[in-house]
Amino acid sequence: MKLRNMLSTTQPGRRRAAGASALLALSLVTGCGSATGTPAVGGSEGAGAAADSKGLAQAEADYKAALNVANLELPMPTDAIDPGHKKVAIISIGQNSTSGVYETRFLEQAAKDIGWTPTVFDGQLDVGKIANYIEQASQSDFDAIVYEGLDAALLKTSIEGALKSGKLVGGFNVVNTVLQDQIILASDDFTNEGRMAAVAMVANSGGKAKIKMYYDKQYALVVNRVEGASAYIQEMCPACTIDKETVSSADLAQPGPPYFSAFLSTNPKGKFTDVLGYSDGAAQAYAKTAAAAGRMDLSITTFDALPAAIAELKNKDYNVSAVTTNNWEYHAYAMMDLLARQMQGKPLWKGADSTKVGLVDKSTADAYPTDGTSPNSAKYVAQFKKLWGKP
Image (tube, helix red, strand yellow):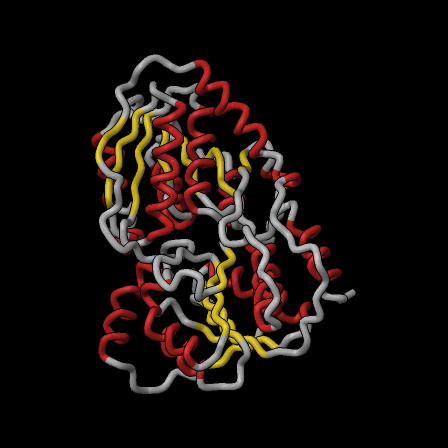
């Protein structure tokens, strides 16, 4: 991988402060986006009513369908395109984060496969560095700039500068709360991710889940996940209860983390059945702490199906029961395709900015890829390359 450290030695004060405050938290959330206000989630919900047989039957059907990831259909263009030879700057959220490693790997390979020259800039989980890299790429000879994982609101000034300089800008695995229709997006639907997590919790509990949900409200994608999960449970499972608590992702750097250790000590077996790990990093911490405390009664559900999450599913010492999948490899190729079409003034196909995901559980984990891809992504990669006239 070609990495450059082109960061100038002097950072604007506002960026330096933003980068310092965000650094640790970004490293602990798989993908990041800032919320623009207080989320409409929080507190306890559900009255613990009798199980709804119709809702449970629907959840069980949804669960069965979600496990069939190989047949998950994703949007595709139909007309071929000659992408030409271009230069693309890939602003990695950080090669010191798991999500950054996989996101960047897929983007760089897709750029090479379309016939372009990619250059990777390592943002090192620092908002200030990422913003500065966008500005520097804007002043260079790149045709496009792709950044990862952050809400455009955090990078608004730098992105606007890039757009004014005539660069195309793409957001990969992001929530975009500003600059609508100005940034090309390729991302999973984070609300749908939450719904899929809820499907697993409702189905696996027989429609009687008592769920603890933690969330860090500064990340828009986390808020969307929790809202999606809550909406599905409220619709399908009147017997389920939800208790929500806001936390800081920075706490994940501490053993436990402390708030989860306190939860285990104050809530005996039977009070809760499920814990939603709002990110892969959070779920790893919860699973290890629960196992050490002998709390295998708590079923943990989480997101993204990266190799660590698949390993947790396979580990009999951890009670991780289900993980949502990701479409990151597909999105990398979709991003390059959309950028190429935009450069040529061609109509942009729809749907790559909010794709649906599936589920993987203990029954399917052994056959699931352990390289960050999903079972259906290879066929889409082949289709994109064919449309580009590449072998």
